[in-house]
Image (cartoon, rainbow, N blue to C red; front, side, top):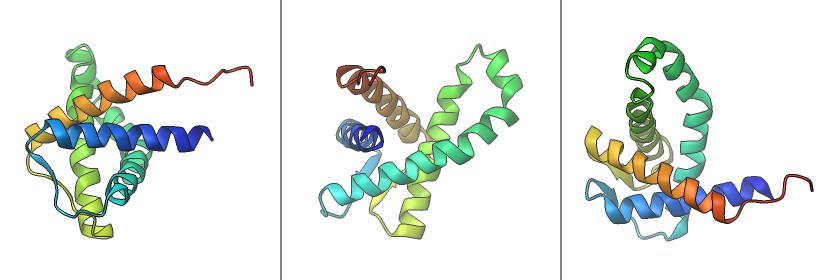
Length: 124
């Protein structure tokens, strides 16, 4: 159940990013399928590629006091979009790095807010 809630939250955060950032475009009108597939792809990229990027750029992260993680978030959103478009033929396009950077920032903020609103009890 927790995985399903996180999946929906990520889909809603991606919807907010598409709505707010002009460089993130959804061309197909398949409804929630695009956002659901993109949420799964983004979750997999965050689970597999993001730790490798953080390890490789550890000196930059330390040097910038953690702000380089925002760049890594943008890169992972851009990569997830490329994977979704090229491998799964999902119409979720991120046009450039700055759109990916702003989109990742919005996805992060919306995810934190929605996760705080629907937080489940840890004791159950």
